[in-house]
Length: 425
Length: 109
Image 1 (cartoon, rainbow over the protein chains, first blue to last red):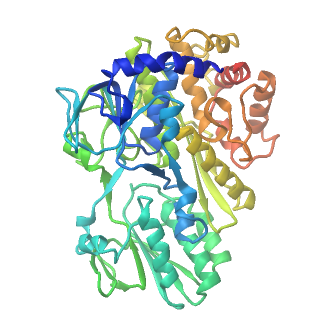
Image 2 (cartoon, chains in turn green, brown):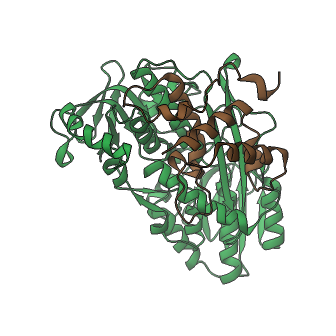
Image 3 (cartoon, one colour):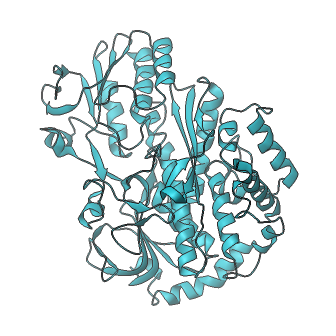
């Protein structure tokens, strides 16, 4: 028996006892040392690493409404018809069976930062010593006139939170006429996954080139230029999909006509498409805003980067896409996973009365497929700079791919399988 | 002061520390926790505790010889070992951090 298994088996009994004997049969515990809200890259990793780094001595409850994890990274391969939703979906079982995390399948309705409780949508409350909020972003459909109803009816999809919409967007593209226009509207940065829209464009173009070669892919970007890996993406588009992909910068969408699939912009002329994928502006998830933690322009959460503790509430940590980022820190799954480990170690240190880490580190590696066969990356290493109270990229480190390659596509797939295991396994 | 020396005061962890991670639950020191946290920055690609998912073309780091890890990281940084991404990531870590990481991964059971 490995050490971890020995410890787990030793602690199994006490964990149940510590939860008032109600941990069995999926009942909701009334308290936990650490409560994590959100089972994405940030939250699931935090839950696992608090358990691991405390040698399985700190009890953790993870609250997540979905029964399975669906990865946003790799989801553009589903949009492009290369993979199925099942290929990017993983169970949460190992967090429970291997790491002893108590998983509560529910939504959080509210947080009381004075009483240190979270109240679930189904009514019960859980008291915490440390709370970790990792609910991701919410899309602000109301910022684009007409988008709310168009989204609700399924006419205009976002497919930015991976799930059924991801597969539905592929079906729209599949049903499009040859010679049609697929248009994607991109909000002003910051938004979740900076290179994601351009990867989507690449994979949709690959599908259309093969199946509907007279079609066009139109990028309607609120930003001036491609916001990530621009040179590599543009080279791929011109070489792999000549004449098919068109980039239009400074196109900030303000309204849609869902019936005609026409987008109106702040400054530029209207555009009509056959399939319209409209990404509205994003902000910290509603729960973070409602809890009063979106203290950066009412949109993102400011944190102490040594621990990712909110600057607005003690013992509440915010990680992942909800935070006000440090310089050159992307809102990515890899970054959320990295932040989770810093937060987990800080939480373990605080609960064990150990000195906090004076110099936490973060890494980020974002792969993007430019075709089903080839990929590119951007990578960075970030160190905490005490004098400036923020993370900064380590001078001389990081960078982008020298060129797109099949080897990087192999590594992209390997990256996904390993980070899924690191997050959930 | 260059990067290789900058964290010397903080990263005084020696190879024997990895052995301590095998100790009794709850007995870990702050330095040990910080090292495990640093090593977790490799786990996204190389697997939790240095054990990569088999068949993913990414090497496991657990139980690799300490000298080998240090030499490879140095070769990535110097450009002597060709890479797609590791030369960019290796430059983000100081000599002391690399040494501590190598000791940690070499010492994993």
